[in-house]
Image 1: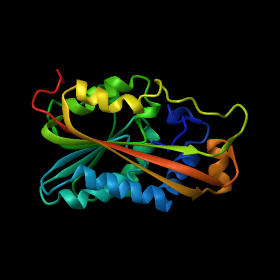
Image 2 (image 1 turned 90 degrees about the vertical axis):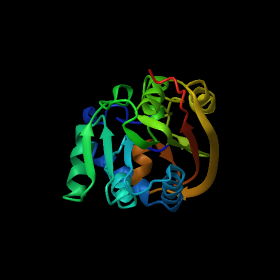
Image 3 (image 1 turned 180 degrees about the vertical axis):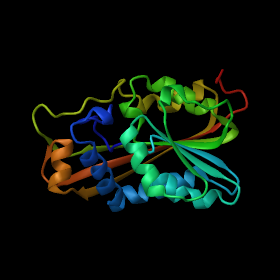
Amino acid sequence: MTTGDSGPGWGDLDAACDSSRLLGFLDEMAALPAVAAGKRRSYGLLAPAPGDRLLDAGCGTGADAIALVPSVLPGGAVIGIDSSEAAVATARARAGDRAGLTFTRAELIALPFPDAYFAAARADRVLLHVDRAVVAVHELLRVIRPGGRVVITEGRFTGVEWIPGREPPASASGDILPALPLILEHLGAIDIRVERDDSDVVLSDDALAVIGVRGAAARLSVVHIAATVGAGSRTG
């Protein structure tokens, strides 16, 4: 749900002291040109089409699901899931009565959907905050039909000065990102591609305080890993 740090409360947003502030941070990040461009690229890699059912895993405030739903209408739907009740409530409020949108609380490591339920799925800045990330990847592949696409996007800040005691761990379950293409291949995914884009960004004082760094200028590295679910994927 966030960009590049395991930070205050991202693993359990509902237990955070100020979840509304953290959700506001997501809005600020989404407005950064580099992040917005990365989101558009992730949509393109997902290749949605009218009639598709899409999963937005770790939907946060719902902005991505709302942006994607026109691409699957008529006949399709976007389902956003998040482990945070606060995030799901925010997403529902922002979506209003838009057709084709559903938001529900669920854990990525135990998705409440049958096998091959979705045409495609995305997880944007989520895996680094999941304790059992390999299980989460397995679940994503399980709920996508053979021939469907999965797009996993992660972001990290570099070139910043972390406030002592606020340095983020590599991830909740270790640094899975370099191994992710091999994990996807082992699980039967095909047509695996990796894209990376580095951009300079400027953060507000409040955003700096949220993530625990000094100095407004930072380098943001966004990585997309896209793959197709093979007919023989190990999803059972």
